[in-house]
Length: 394
Image 1: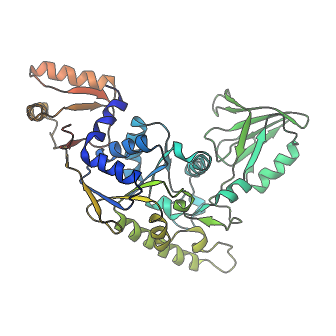
Image 2 (image 1 turned 180 degrees about the horizontal axis):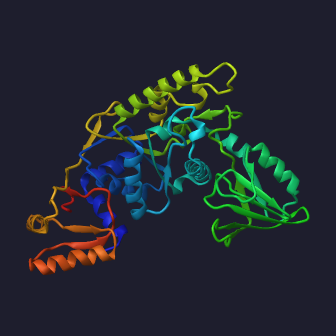
Image 3 (image 1 turned 45 degrees about the vertical axis):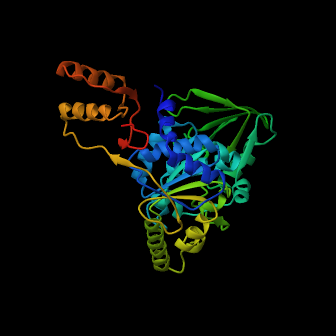
């Protein structure tokens, strides 16, 4: 059984069909109860497959978001992770260039073709505002093969974008010039570009590997985007939710906690800003960060599906009957007994393994114990298993 097949098992329940119908009828503001572990990943994956509209999953923290992102990557294509760019307000010296690259990549992709993507994010990532689509376009350098552009011109633009000229590029924000070649590591691509010139004409553009310097892919056209998170010259910013189309489906875990955390982060940003000396040039917190009031106002403009035991937006409730897996304390006898008990109750057991070796190891252990066990093994490492009483699957 493929990962796609297993993901479709979760869509058969009446609850999921009701949710799909509500979304299709634009009956936003729904509360989902009873989802445990990776059952949330299965549900979000199935809704995205059905609707083929931009879908966003917002979770409590980076770790939980990363776990569900890994689930969804196994179940679906075109899944994006949207992280925070730094840990605390105004600590730009501690920014993570790889995260800035991911944020720019997400913005670039959902601006270009939003319906193709499922985005996973968390509260702290939403706290940071983003540049508007028009500002992003204004601060993007488009380069095509056969363009007439001088190396000096691109050199000046990159300095204006606050790129660093180095001998060899190693991270986003670096560029180097050697003869008729410019290497540049944009914040819109996870590999650096090599731009080759003949005079003032661009003859070839390719990405390359940092270690081997070997070419990876040729391009007819590329976009070079600066670090749009820390550029203090850009004041026209909005919260991430405001760049999403109104028909975006937003799955939000524990909305009360979200607004509480955003409120605390915003208060901290104001306190930090006030500690700066008058000579320090910084944009105000209201420009760089989202308040809980702004986030709340933005959420209700979309198809909002809350997840948790209570709601601050919704009256329409859909309850799933999903339970967590028990702990087997490394006892294979207990595992086998549990699987066989569920099989007698009419459930189908799926044993999700990280790889083929683990799958074979389980098979060998069961054979050595000489006990009958009914299950279907699949290569699908999951965040957390679950027992779905609605669909009768374990």
